[in-house]
Image (cartoon, rainbow, N blue to C red; front, side, top):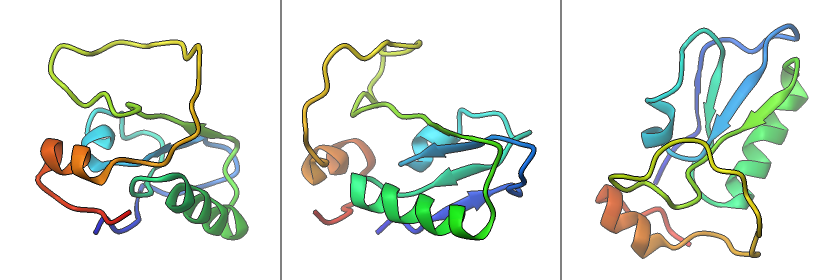
Length: 102
């Protein structure tokens, strides 16, 4: 199970970067706070809401790989179509070796 992790200090004058996985967070600069929520939209929504209720940042930037944690896939991609789904625990297990529950 991935526990919420906040790297850095949230303040009203800095943005907050939000990612689901530690594997995504390791590639981010450390000058601004980074919140790791764990996979899935419910975890993301509840974790961000709890933090916003205590200390709101200047703004929130949600970053992610959309399941694209694989060699050779990099860069910035503009999303053209979104399908309603949560996450595939088995797919994440294959990539990370950890189960997150569904």
